[in-house]
Image (tube, rainbow, N blue to C red):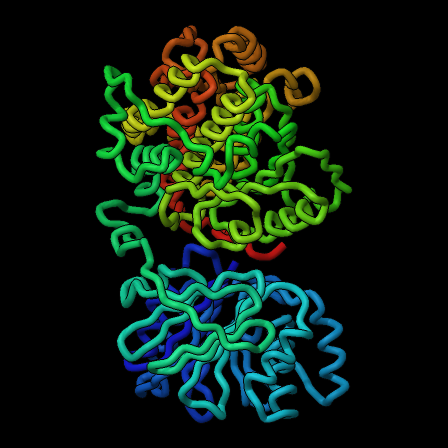
Length: 628
């Protein structure tokens, strides 16, 4: 949930740490701090935005001195409120150790009792202070840093990524991780440490991934990696695939705007990836409707074989937030095409519902970051129950990807805005492709149908491009909605699945209460909420359900609702029934969600701007939810 940075070597440590924390702001935080190696450690913390920390650092005489090592952190309050005493970095009682932490120590209360019996006292309400004192306890006992870290590793339960400095060792930065992201960057006479490669991409692209339960020591010119058995691991570095342009806003006002406009490209990239092709040149002109030669989707893109697909008898989707909504779309498309039953569950509830998994059931986890704690725990539970697991994630080598039997990587690239847009669209595309391949493997669709649906999918990026004009077209509707207290979304079938995402987007960044309801449930309670002036947004893309949906719109309109429509262009409506409407290009109804979601994304973005909020950093939310 929070962000970690670390640096050791030749460079302006203070500025490197602050720049890295700026890159990690998207992860969400309510306080921040840095620690610089000195005797004693120089620690500066601040509550609120990173600008508050920068002001305090700029006014600190100690921070202006040269330093060769330091660590930094953006904290999202879990144990204890947002305050300077609870902010990271945390010092041990004897001030011999300082660290920053991402994750949750589940047995911190038990360990705290133990440490108090050993004479330790605590100044904060955090689980992290327990960890730093436990490290110091073992270090003072054995006078061996690595031995102390391995001892702590055995004691801690939960998730953690630590960046640690010891007063005794002025040249070495230490780190360890379990179920929380951590990556190392190698510079010239320097090493960088962070939760996310974007934190140090301005300095280096040479990286070392850190595996689970590994402990590292980093100095100016050396890296040493140890596995859980205390054996040194020799690992070659790799080159990060990201470039600086992907983590900068460029000409756009906000990352959310930039990422909405990137959707035609990233959806196309995801389609090509599913064909084992990297770019449109190798695939021909996939946007030309006159071109009948489209590449074929590959089972291998999902790390699976045709036989693996044929053996699937049921599908269980586990996910959180927008990924959960993508799962509902996958369910509808998969059941329609492949005639295989699909169940969608919130990952946070999966383990606690006493799940029963049948033979031949594939569990699909969907996550942008690949580090979502609830989803990762659900994947582990599914494997424990004997199920095969497929992950649809956006980050190579992420925890969920490593834990799963099979993996499909969406090609969204780094997504900085907290409210997902392009990653969600790529998840939709992945669900379409999976459903099509399953239908093909099961013999449920003909070769001609497969080719026709493939063509429709490759036409989607061009149609998404057409929808980018909604950036300004949506403004009249946004102005009508910005002062609303409650907004209702209605839809049926796939339209309802997409309306859930539209409601979430709008509530995330405008702070307006928004709810999505299946139109068919109106008479079962929902309609009691409708009063004069209640804004209702109806989604209309499914021709077989359009008549029923329009009838539902008439019901709420007759009770005073102010209705808006977002529809596929071939769905006819009476314009006088609506205060505003927008139409998206025609596509196959199963894929309509990829177009309907564009005006919903623009609507939430524009309402957020009209209300004077920052759409990239909604309050109380984090990009990567790495704790339960």
